[in-house]
Image (cartoon, rainbow, N blue to C red; front, side, top):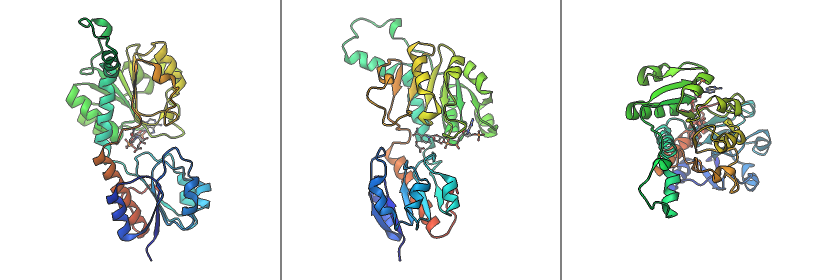
Length: 319
Ligand SMILES: NC(=O)C1=CN([C@@H]2O[C@H](COP(=O)(O)OP(=O)(O)OC[C@H]3O[C@@H](n4cnc5c(N)ncnc54)[C@H](OP(=O)(O)O)[C@@H]3O)[C@@H](O)[C@H]2O)C=CC1
Ligand SMILES: O=CC(=O)O
């Protein structure tokens, strides 16, 4: 008998077709902000679960006694309670790697847009404000030859460092718990303490996973270490930053600008002060959101799930 697999997010047809070759597929796509309750009835007989973002913890596992494998199609996996999964012998996987270049492109877009004020000036033009030749009021700051500080020099961090070093002649500094020799050799990246990185960088980019150690790693004290001309970028998770402190620093112009792909609450509430600040460029968590990359992530999650259900070790096993 084919194992029953519940898919809880919208996926490409090709993904459903691939799954259906080996599994009985129950397709229950629900928006990311839904609480999962519409899914619960399908979970009773599920042996596999595929999607991203749903909190998978003891309470959900309690409802899914047959579950053997959980496949996240995302690099981040803070939605998974790995200890609970391990206790129950459920294999869990994510999809790192295939999205590195796409997320790094998005980080560069945020860096360029924040530095050169692309969104703000686009809004000004549309409002009919370009009436005379432009002066200093609309000038931005350079990206090339500046210092980029990457907090979390992992797979995506290195893809950002490559673009910044080889394409924009930037100096790369980074902060990890351990040294990244590849980044040091390939991109002349220099390890710094967090404080030194914040003090020396023109652009600071957050790219750690969300963990108990990185939650609110950037708060008022850290933002105060940044240059007043510094630009803060976040493509990790919103909760790695104290968003209220960031808003305050941007509002008071204690830092110059920010480029944000991720937010404490997603979707970002329409009344968020971030949306009122001209020195903020926001995009709605689109780091990996191209068709090619989303399909690659989903197909990798299918491979992970099928391997796990066959009793083989999947390429991206977490537990
Ligand atoms: N915006 C988006 O759409 C996307 C966002 N992401 C986010 O980016 C994150 C990173 O992805 P990826 O590059 O693949 O992950 P990696 O695991 O390859 O890299 C994470 C890096 O963070 C460092 N790190 C972890 N904990 C700490 C800490 N406490 N202090 C300092 N550094 C730390 C690690 O180094 P060390 O262990 O030495 O400390 C590692 O170098 C994901 O977890 C996800 O949250 C991912 C994809 C898309
Ligand atoms: O945020 C996206 C991810 O892949 O993680």
